[in-house]
Image 1 (cartoon, one colour):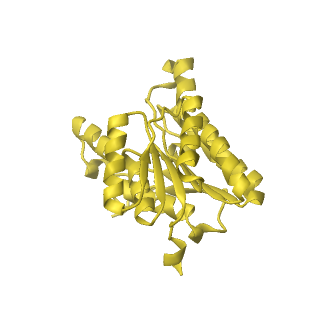
Image 2 (image 1 turned 90 degrees about the vertical axis):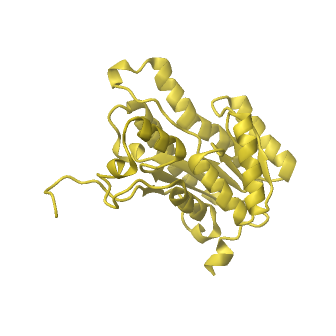
Length: 261
């Protein structure tokens, strides 16, 4: 039964970028389905508050581990702290990411490297560290969070598009190499999402969700929960025969052509 396959009781999940937006929505869903959850982000106060809300709303344990995912030692500590606290790692959600947009000719080398460190290298380090424990136990699920930019590219985001595309291929190779260990790796490419921070930025620019959704077939940006739904599915036993895939959750394809009434 699907309800049994979505039971995360006895499982331990790490969610990077877990204090806000997609990460928070994912951590909360996993906790409500019975998982013990470890959330990570840079801002300790915000992270602790998020962990408390998740624990209160779910009845599951939620541990906050302040982590700068661009710092390799910090990511190593995050995974080790999880194992020390819970004894295992069953699920890894590499959600931390982001960018600063700008024309290609103005992107400095350090800016390029920084975006890869945040969006790609951090996922590699976390996967490597958590993967050692998963390989030992012959099971595990890894979900990497990419973007539409990794599929179609986005002007003003050459570095971000390249980093997210690399993350998608990293997912494919992880799945191919580690399938023999009972580990699945999949990727969710998120479209335009009305997270609290995004909505605030749109409002500051004089835009609203209707305007931002004008080019989306379903007519509106997505919500963090709508991305979390796909992440949780990939992490669950309901996706037991799915690995190495990137699925776009973006409200539909934007195509050229004639205007339709």
